[in-house]
Amino acid sequence: GHLGAGRLEHMLDFVRGVEICETVLSNRRLISIRNPFKRRLMRVLAQKSITLAFGARLWRVVFKHMRVLCNEGGNDDLVALFTRVLFTHAQSELLAENTSGDKSENTTWDKVKAFSQ
Image (cartoon, rainbow, N blue to C red; front, side, top):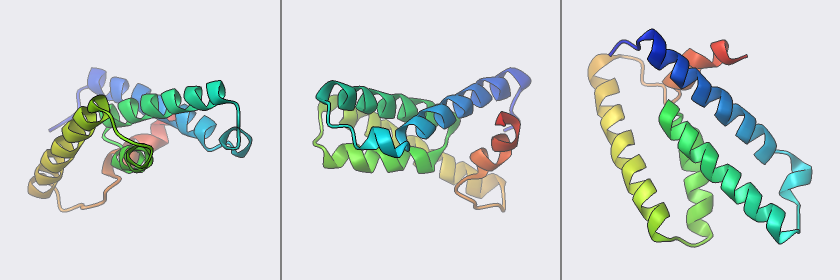
């Protein structure tokens, strides 16, 4: 469906948030932190990035973090989130195939990336 102006602006906010989270998470000095408190904060930031990426349908970011968090050991909250993500992703893929010939996995990202710079 067509994105309304308010919904598009909301999605752009999510994309901007994901960009900020991912920039911090990819900082090499922060990745090598040994301090347990700071590592926990980085994990919280990764979970925030997942939430925002889910809202913006940035599936590559969502699945990247899911893989890492699953390797660290699961809990019920993560299982619930990932179940929701997988079903939503499957539904959006079906809708995308039915409404568009463009099969890029980053369609949403490609559309809004230009606006977020």
